[in-house]
Amino acid sequence: MEVKVVKKVLSVNDTMAHQNRKYFSDKKVFVLNMMSSPGSGKTSILEKTVGRLLPEINSAIIVGDICTTNDADRLAKTGVPVIQICTDDFGGDCHLAAHIVGNAASDLDLDGVQLLIVENVGNLVCPAEFDIGEDARVVVLSVTEGEDKPLKYPLMFRVCDAALLNKTDLLPYLDFDREAVINNIRQIHSDMPVFEVSAKTQDGFPAWILWLKKQVEKKVG
Amino acid sequence: MHEMGIALEIIKIAVDSIPANLKNPKVERINLKVGKLAAVVPDSLKFCFEVASKDTALEGSLLHIEEIPVTARCINCGNSWTAIKPVFICEKCDSGQVDLLSGRELDIVSIEVEEGA
Image (cartoon, rainbow over all chains, first blue to last red; front, side):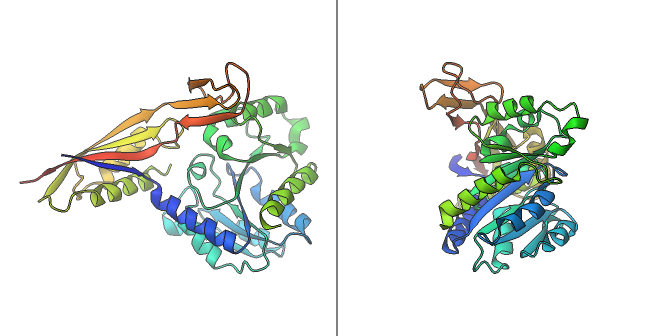
């Protein structure tokens, strides 16, 4: 006999993400899910971002990695509250699932925090599939990774609200075609803002910071 | 990369869907829809499913995967099409204001189950 089921395989995650979204709304916190391949510079961008947001916006960070607390140690030096999730404890997962983010968020004191940034596990595939209850998603791509990454990982670039093109200080030394990468992003997501930045020199940061502030203000006022 | 986690979720949902009145239920087939844009590799998923379903009512069952094409519709002119490549620009009016109609599915449609001996 055939038994109709008609259920999303990720429905448990979706339910948890919905609960997270409600919790974050009650706490009046804007949540940003930051994703990229490993080594694109998410942590460096965050180190330079959270200080620039002060004094208008207080931030907190949840950072996900398979192993080590290196990123949390670096980010803690910025003075913002940081929680490191090591997915090794959960089976070495390649992404942060909603329940893991929810557990970590409940360990943070979010009173007075307007922006919670979740630095996801470095991976351009799986994190795109998992809703964590965020308000916006950004993808970081560095200029050392190749112009065709958006075409190779279309779901990631489709589900994100903005892209950061990092390490632009290296452009003089590379055969990287920045017009080609922007054109590739536009084919996947035509109206997505692309911020060309260098976490090392902080070139391009004002536009990125302005965009982020506007997103936070839209939700928490 | 997360196919084992997906396989475990499928097994859990399928086991929970077996009618309680069946004696020694044996699931023969699970019908799954997977969109071409979903971050799932069907062959990896089948492999993980085979390994993870051992010693459950699903052991030896067929995981049938229907791959769903990526279809899109232009918000500007209403043109709809099946995307062969991941390009979401309208072929008719060049607009990038595009809705995805299908391609992100990861759904269990049904299970086929019989009473065992």
